[in-house]
Amino acid sequence: MHHDDGERRPSAAPDEETELLSIRIRKDLYRAFRRCAWMTVHETGLTLDEVHNRLVEDLLRARGC
Image (cartoon, rainbow, N blue to C red; front, top):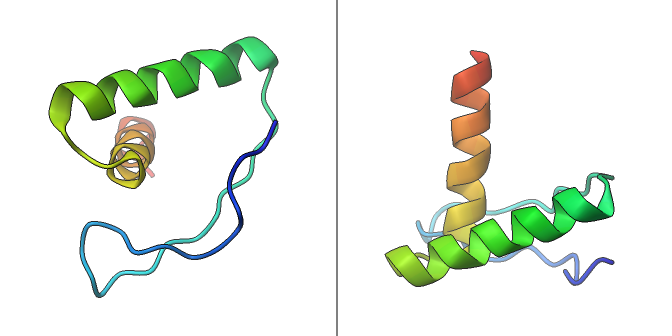
């Protein structure tokens, strides 16, 4: 299930553009990811885009990319 409209949206910094990342994952992973992301939004006050960026940054950093 895909809810994004495909538009580029502003990120935390007004001079940065965002890109839509589309990946295929199992349904259980999708639900867990969405739940985790929204919990983080509510706990931190960050936007969903900011949380997504941080999650991807953490993954890339952990993998040494």
